[in-house]
Image (cartoon, rainbow, N blue to C red; front, side, top):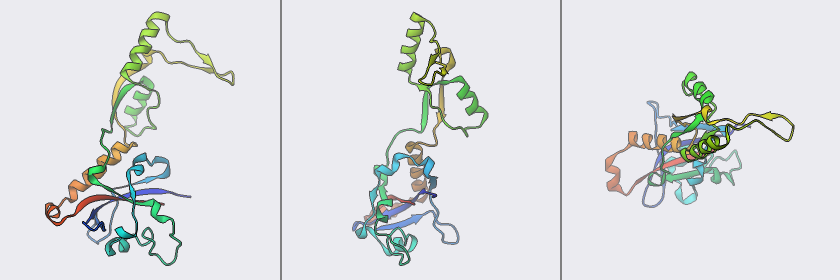
Amino acid sequence: MSWYQSTYVGIQDKDEKIYPWGMYDAHGNLHPIYVRSRSFITDIGDYFTNITEKNLSEELIKEFAYECGKDPDVDTSEISQYFGYLPVNEIPTGSYIKTGYCLLTDISQYLQRNGYFEGFYDVLTPEEYAFKLENELKFGEPKPIRNEFDEEITVHSCKDYAYFCWEDTECKEYDAYLMRQAVRCLEAYELAEKDYRYVIIKTEG
């Protein structure tokens, strides 16, 4: 079964009612900031608060009838747990630009594929690399080991790594970056005078 997480820009008034804010196209259709399939959902969903009855505005119900539990054709008694909001000032911080000592073979693949890469899994921090280097200088390069299936496993040496910097587009920091950029595109300064605040709306299913 397909499962997706989608996020949108919304606003919340002083009575805690939430309204969809964008992005809208020229035909009045609401579009998400991003859509992630189940395999690529990050843990940014943990930061959201469930949307409940007190948060429902007429405009929100119109756009998200199913998630609001207002679709008469479906049972939505538990859907609110997949429908949430996150105030913009509570979006997690941090950079999606990652650094570390990565395998040269992985770096080569990353560069050849223009960033479309499965990910760096064998990454050492500078401290880990320094300890590894000190150990190799004392005792020599690591030798292959055998696993429980008697298969030989290569243990990489420090010479197999290089310090690298890359964009991690599958982390919560990247999701947070997209959210902030979307809000900046839709900011209206007069909202500050009307007791509104910007929020991110999340749907899953």
